[in-house]
Image (cartoon, rainbow, N blue to C red; front, side):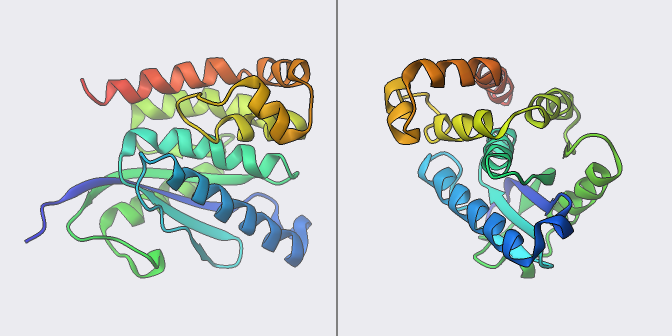
Length: 209
């Protein structure tokens, strides 16, 4: 019998998808899929098994729940860089078998919990809802910051988050975006990027307590 593993499930719906139209929805989903591949490249979240469902809905899993909010920020930055956005519901819970690759067929309670968290997010002013109360306090503040990003700020944050260890230099990010180092620094400062990453590190370390 497989030893149960605690995972995080992120379930999302695009915000105001009707305004995006079918082609816009497809582009947003492609961007989320690419961002999910970037997250897998971090080497700390495991295979996330990005799965699209219900047209404008999506779902991923994170092997280590401590990184769920970091992933949520990356996904929102990716979408807001292209003028879109997403609601995200996050839940943590055990599974007793390897999940994926098609998350639409998973029925462990944590998947239903994530769906309920998403419905709460859609009914409140907070686009991210985390079922873990301590994490939700941070999610509320992160939502406020993410919602105020310009497309340029969001694109810069997404580029910076390509590596969760902040190993990318400002010069590397500037070259990726075709911008000056000064412009990148200004965008990251105004997007509260370093404050966000510091706060996420504190939350992630709290899982060891």
